[in-house]
Length: 547
Image 1 (tube, rainbow, N blue to C red):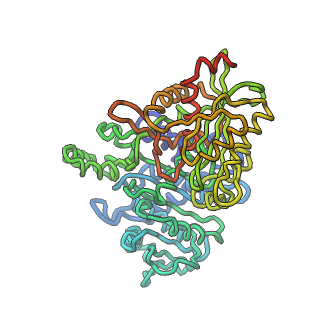
Image 2 (cartoon, rainbow, N blue to C red; image 1 turned 135 degrees about the horizontal axis):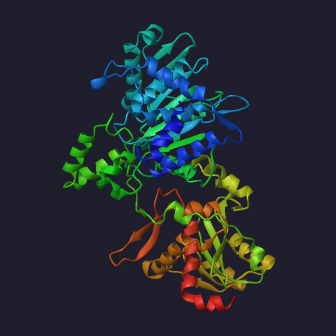
């Protein structure tokens, strides 16, 4: 049986209610199984082997099913099948080297990861397979370790071949071992990990633990790193980075063929009040996780905002973010493209969002087709040259690929040189004759740049960044994006910036853009385009007539 296809059938018929991103990800996997293309294929035997191992040798450690053989749920089998079943058709090595399994508490994630850890130590055909479970604190790291140890104790076959030593579990037949580690475990250097399980990723405040463990796998043929976590309240941490990275892969913002994101969560915060939607974050609801228990907790928390917040985070994976999403991915996605030659000699509206070193600097030109009133957008982004490698490695974003495609340019040193921004406006004007009638800019650190732009003949207009100025243009931009009236040349950076954009609404109903995810995510492309829309709102008829 192909468990991915079986799970997909259950999703399609509504038997299994899943989040939009889980549906999208499994839809991609199903398409690849049915229509294999490229480097990787699905090997059904390889997919079933770890499932058969777990259900044959592993037993439940506690609760009403304690001592009984572990029977995996369909969603667990589908995940394991995806993780192990896709292989390189030439080498036979696994496609996926990293996975994020994001699911609410009490959905059996520790149990299934314990089974995977045992399989990787014993049956993955890797000599001297070093398996680690990692967390911020040793007690948390030992949760899965203890689960594995109990499975070994309850299985005659496993107990016969696996020894408990002081710090680890040891499998002499292949010299393999399983150990729990934490940030305070002393030096983590020198490890040679075959499989790493990072438990409760949301509790890890910095990237170092992740980076060290990831680097420890560099000598292995087909290593595996699995991050399991619920949502958390710690912001600006490795969880925010990896969650955003996982979302971007599912959403198609960029590709990573070796990363498998499975994200069980509510699609909308309001869904916590709709019991039929609870399964989106709780795939084991009604089996492993008791429906009655969740109903009781919700009933008690409805009159207690403090308790409700904890339930939303831990039982529904509602992240404690700074704001609500502005638009959906479907709203912002537009794969249409155009050639700048189409607008040779045309007027445009310019926009710019400047930064120092941390954020992106973005410049935008907005053109319009007089007959159809379609909007056409071209952009350029800049980052400091000295930060490129760090951004690629730490932020997990393909700035290097964007650079190769000509979507990003580098400024020498570690800061943005605004002369490069001026040069781009001049370049487009000289090469295509596209000249901005107005250039709207955020006044942040813009004094000398504005003077330089004026010296080059550009009409500069200060754009005050407040609700009074931005609210209506932002509403118009949102409506135009939803109506597919904005052709932005399928620029992945702008699509990413739009996906990161949240909205703050004041008591008068005015809106302004904010970062919807971690502060490390960027909305600079949105801000630059919105500045253009301020100009479009203020000069629409004049601009249209000039075309």
